[in-house]
Amino acid sequence: MLDYKPSRKKAGRWSPRRPFGARRGARKPVLRRAARPAGTPLARGRQTNTQRVSLRLPRLRLPAWRWLYAAIMLWLAVGIGVTAVELWQAPLRHVHVTGNDRFSATEIVGFSGLTDATTMATVDPLATTERLLAHPHIRRADVRREFPDTVRITIEERTPVARMLRQDGSAMLLDTEGVVVAPLPGDDAAGRQLPIIVGVAVPDTLGTRVDDPALHRALTALAEVRALGIATADGLAVDVSDPFDVRLRIARQGRELMLPREGMGFALQHYMALSKADPGRLSQAHQIDLRFAGTAGGGRVILNP
Image 1 (cartoon, rainbow, N blue to C red):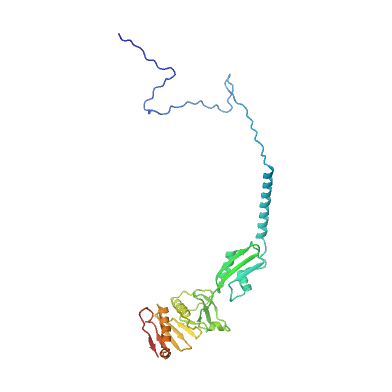
Image 2 (cartoon, rainbow, N blue to C red; image 1 turned 45 degrees about the vertical axis):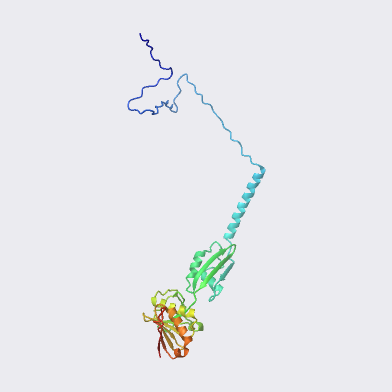
């Protein structure tokens, strides 16, 4: 006979049956009591354990030295603000101009638009620079404010290097960038010694940049002439009317140099070496063709009497 002993579950460890389809280890739903709506009276016999709690914040108590430090900082902030306003509204008293050669400092200040009524607050360095660059003689300009009452202007003027003849007989001055600087005055002796460029149309508006390949060849030839030390006061003229070559005429010597479009510097160096080696033979020629001497290895020079 077998002894039968029914199994007993431990008290307090009853677990409900897992529903069909629920995965093992899933969290069990937690039942929460619904919150009581506001204004609903409590059920009879129930009491609340709500207590009124009053919080009292501590007063801000700083040491005396900290109050003194805060007062000093406030005094400094107010002083700096008042000083900044006074400097910003201070009148303009001094204007320093550097880099001017053709014009005086008073004329440069007049070009900039600064007057006696100008204050440091109304000085706009960018706008002042643009007004200065609008003048055809000024190439670069830099305007800076120096508080409390000074403005410093630094300019670079355009230097005329050549002149171009117009149909009415007047001449216009050009700089190294091909910008029309100004008309040639009748009493300007230095301007009349500048080389003449022939074969390029002359614009009437001052400050206009002449964008012409022929003018670029002429300016390149003049730059090579100045680099080699050839005198430009001997009635020098550059003719670029022919698109295939550049003709350099020296009126005082009665001589014409025919330069190539490329390698003008090398051709002029060959001419200078030839003038030192055989000046007598070179002086008999009125036209010297250097178009075939413009490259290394091509030392061919044609002398035409």
